[in-house]
Length: 437
Image 1 (cartoon, rainbow, N blue to C red):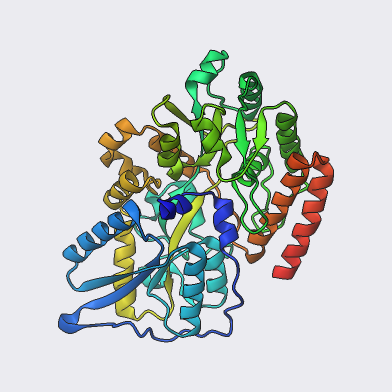
Image 2 (cartoon, rainbow, N blue to C red; image 1 turned 90 degrees about the vertical axis):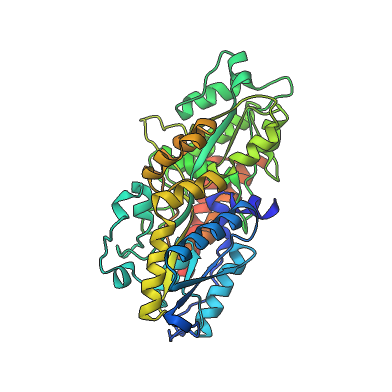
């Protein structure tokens, strides 16, 4: 279970794991040593990823087997890595040794690093178009996530998720409350249900090296307040009015006894023990939330509440697939066919129904009737893929996110002033930006 548990966590945790290992500009691409054509004209490609256990591995294997059966002249070697940090290191080492995989699972910041060093290919180079068939079928947020700041399409989608609000409907109703649709309503409900041993929500800011769910909650609040924590060009905005409002909001909940700070997924634990009423976590974590609840009550799910002006926002997490530049023309054609297969509606329906990740195309939902009947959260969460946004793909963003953790710790654990904490975080984040440019 531990491998799956790691995979379903937040975008902030994911980005923190993607520590930049050094510039790749000195690394030049060359022909991969992987077999381009074997006996009988078979083209062999490799896919490096971390789907190493559980349903993620079994489903990827099943999909790959089905692809190879339909395409007998293509052989796909699945190369497993134990975690995202190791994956990034292995891909980087492969590039340096002129022997990367044909394709690899990547985060946006990794892809930006690879593209700058010209060790991955833009999709248009092997697909024949910067807007290939199938692109328009993806949710809008997914489509935008496949492009880097230069505007080019560099990736194809693989496993995606967003943040979901999980809650105990029985405890809400007992206090005359309903599932909140705005963050103002959330604060009202959280304060109403807290007391007598119950704290509405528990969060873990994480550490500077590994931000946690509390940091993602802060990021979601910033966006809902009208100004994301980072601008589209990667500029930190950690002392914007929206950021100060978010820190003040969380501080007020803490002072009211409606928010607690903990570690090791405290919101999930408290919700399951009926000592908490809400938890915010990845949609891919539904299995673990439900496991914590253990049938004691029906687990409610909603998309994240809106801001005061009705602003919808969410944090997009998960990875894409990139093609390394050392792939031969035959490997490019074979790998592109495989990438399209994995992102197809039928494959995504199977992938989502077994792993908990969201389908990247709404067309997959039409093939998931039985699953959706038992798991209505999936359709609700998938809809947020139209507007969810990932952190900007710049190398300094991962480190600068750690400054948010410091701000949250000052405010929630030390009772610090939100404005002072925001200003200090902004100053440190700007220094991170300058150092990373």
